[in-house]
Image 1: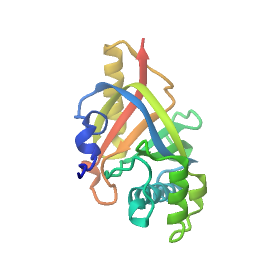
Image 2 (image 1 turned 180 degrees about the vertical axis):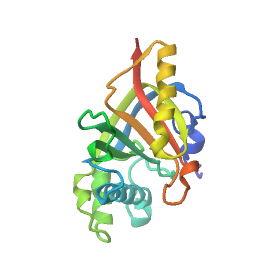
Image 3 (image 1 turned 120 degrees about the vertical axis):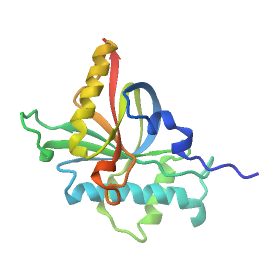
Image 4 (image 1 turned 135 degrees about the horizontal axis):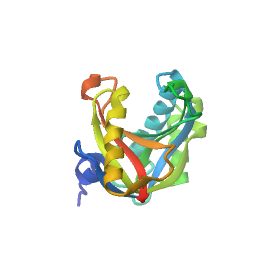
Length: 208
């Protein structure tokens, strides 16, 4: 019996495909491949981190074709890139060089440290990215959050964050750990024009 492919755009619309209106959601604990870094997202280091995560995520998906089938494996669509952002130092004028980030791609529960190690060994035969050794598997639970779909250039995100702040004020919600926010990239910035980029913006909240 063939099991239908798990596609996050169809099965997890609440978390990954919201509409352009601010909503409150509960985000459960999920596994991610994670890398930490600092600096401007337009610089090469950030691109290298993304390449490392995508290379491993796609290799995990393709392991059965390489003769390695993890326990509990099923076919699926690779999840989108996500990043947690914060400013290293509080500055009056925003500076992209003053950013700290945690870039990540969600994984299904069958992905274990052994599965990750198998993927690293497999993909390292063709690619020699130094960041492979720094990738870790981590469970993260955001819990209660407020999110909005931002459509447009990344530099215009403050307009959407203002809507998030107004929603929180109207619903007696306060941000938890207001230094960090999460971005989920539904569009490939290399292929989509800035005006049509779709990004989920999410912050953790608690009742005021």
